Image (cartoon, rainbow, N blue to C red; front, side):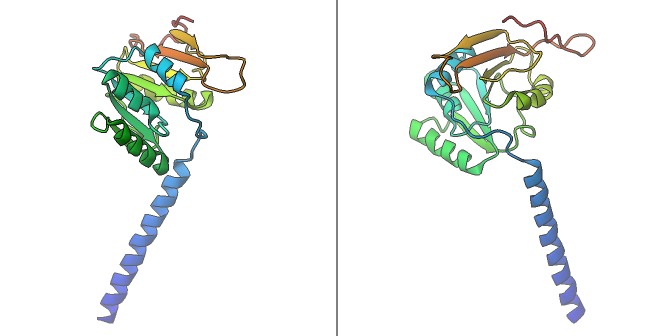
Length: 202
């Protein structure tokens, strides 16, 4: 009986240690790469117009913060939206904001690493990250998104992938963000399975 109790106790400790180690691994993997800076309301409106949001669209915001972009897409256009953020406080805030706006049936929020999230159903993706993060994310966007999907980024570009359109919001001389917006349209994959990043129009 004593041996059995020791075995059960050892197993419980092993399970607890494994769970703790896994949590530590997830925490180490899911480091926040971008500080939280909300998109201005003016830029939110401009980003949705630049993306030409329609009621039939599914808008994904990667690094959604308080959920303002997908909430605006649902409220103004009737589009469905998904916000993804690694910070549980932001997710909770976004869910509360969606309820206040009366669009909780059109949007959902997911606590997840944007590099791990399933985004294949998106028809529009919005970003307010850093250019270095955009570049890391670019292969996932091109692999997972359907040709024709619109990608709109606040402030930061995609390296040698030239945007199809650019837009200036407000006074760019002001020392703040949310003034320069970029639109890319996911291209058809070429026969050699590559993409022509120089094909965009500035």
